[in-house]
Image 1: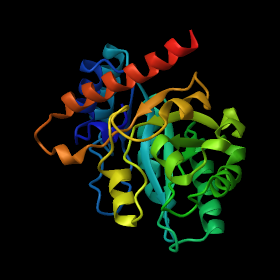
Image 2: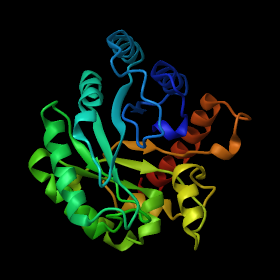
Image 3: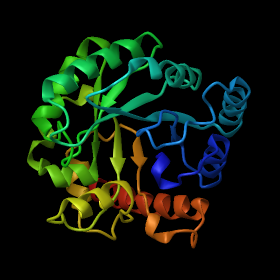
Image 4: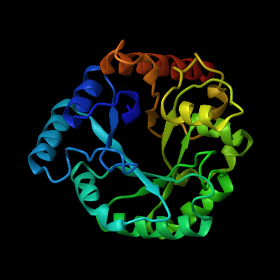
Length: 269
């Protein structure tokens, strides 16, 4: 269960939701993606970190990913140490990194900052994964792989999301990607690619579809990717507002995702 599937402020509530909906793993938002994001309650709160560790142990869940670092022109690594310390205490999940919007930062700047972040994370026993997003800088597969290469000495990897695979138009290249770079894969469905940036951003951050309800060729995408990687279900549905609880959203997303995976397994049997 990725954070955006059931976004709640309390990490303990996130764990409870994932457990009650019967997920195997979950992602947490520990590092603020933008300056407007509120800091995680885990930062500087050792008692809460201990409570999360205890609940994870009781439920059998593991944290596989932590959101998220956005590489900008002004990128202050000193703000990352507290979040990395918390992540390391939660069994060392992978850290998700994205880039700022196109035109705001150069490819070289992204690579340099990513390498520095990967080096810092390695000091905490953590790995970092770059997630390419078509409407952001380093939003092509070639650019994203160059970013990952910059952090290769520190075990950097690549996160691929079904939505962004589609928006980048890289379905034919999936099978050629080095499997060792892929640690988690993000699963969702979405409408056909829009022509305007505003709608692209809305689909990415706020409104996606359950697997089977959108237009993405998910079976083809998953068939070209390693079958033994965790599938992180990332399906923000902010259009639902308060009409559907975070727990019910999480349940619907998992049910639809399992049906998709089981249908693929059935075809392969």
